[in-house]
Image (cartoon, rainbow, N blue to C red; front, side, top):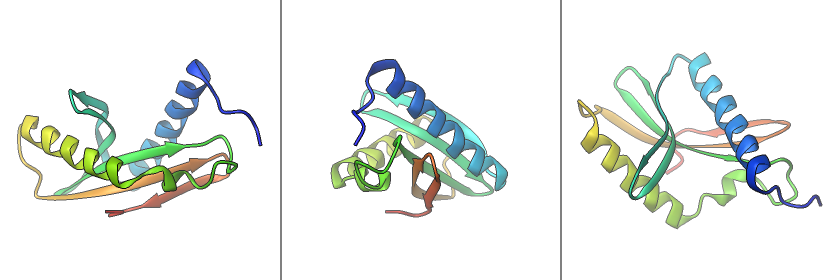
Amino acid sequence: MAAPLRGKDRQRLGRAGEDRAAAWYTERGFAVLDRNWRCRHGEIDLVVRRGPLVAFVEVKTRGGSGFGDPVEAVTGEKRRRLRRLAAAWIAAAPERPVEVRFDVVGVLPTGLSVIPGAF
């Protein structure tokens, strides 16, 4: 098992994973509304929209499967935090979305695992 990435290498890997996830959504007709949206509660990796649907997307990227499937890293606490962040994003948005869902994207060198409506 390889050593975990640190600092800039980890940031580069995470950014590349978010790029791949954003491309996946764009290819399927979604518009990327926000990337790395931040407030005092934390950060949302991607906010995407297609028609009346706005999806809040948590992206987990790994350089390999040695630490398990990346989607397994989205714990109950992370889901609760993403819900709070989504509420803050909606409160700051110029208009409220009609439909909302929470997606999780796992990114490995071998491909993407997208779970629409993960929680």
